[in-house]
Amino acid sequence: MPIEGVDVSNHQALFDFRGWQFAIIKSSEGNTFRDFRFTQHLTAARAAGLIVAAYHYQRNVDARSQADLIRSMVPLSVPVIIDVEDGSGPLSITHDLIKILRDYGYSVPLLYLPRWYWRDHLKSPSLAGLPPLWASDYRGASADWSDYGGNRVLLRQYTSTPFDKNRYLGTREEFADLLGGKDDDEVTPAQMDQLIEKLLWGARFDGDMNLSQWLKDILLPALLEVRDNQREGTTEIDYDKLADKLKEKGVNVPSPDEYAKAVVAELKKEGN
Image (cartoon, rainbow, N blue to C red):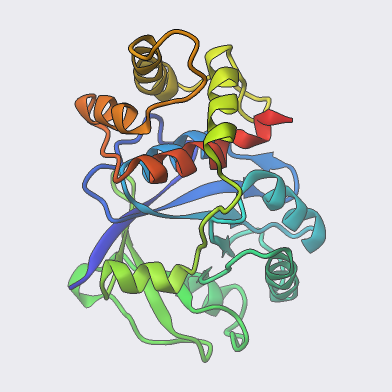
């Protein structure tokens, strides 16, 4: 049975991820642009139980500098998808960028390259040696799932109204296997507690914005309530109680451990 998900960027503020199976979230573009909502979206999507991946809009600049920007934004546990369209430059950059990211340890499971752009702008080159395709086709039931460039279409963006929606012709488990993300083995309760302290004292995301509305309105009150109900002097967070409090606020947390990983993965850059 097909599953459906969304792709989002800074254009979607306070996006409600409930009811979707996966989210592909813009992290960056070229070698300078950082999507200021990436952290907010990734944390919220994971907390809602979605399968997640990041996407990077390739520009016609050096592949290494783009990979280094991605590396500064995206945890290694999150798969990265390269977006190739207007202004992305030649596919030689794509090949180099994917190789560098894989050398860094990232899963790069798909390539966003619309059929029309491949045909009309790139002039139908071979796509052999590149990841399977994430294509776009908004024609509903008549949409074309056929292969092109000698590569397979495995994911389709089927509308951009009112935001981008996508369909995968398989199960959630199969999609998770396709993406190939991995657990963040560095997450520990001690790290979580340290980062929560920074959050409580007003940590900033990416140096570009104050705590997001989602963190202010949902996460922070839940953390404070759990802390207030613990014995005086404790340095630990009761993740089960935290999960319960978040569920009361409408946030689906699959398990305390998954929630801890989701938050730590996005906040641990603040710990240095």
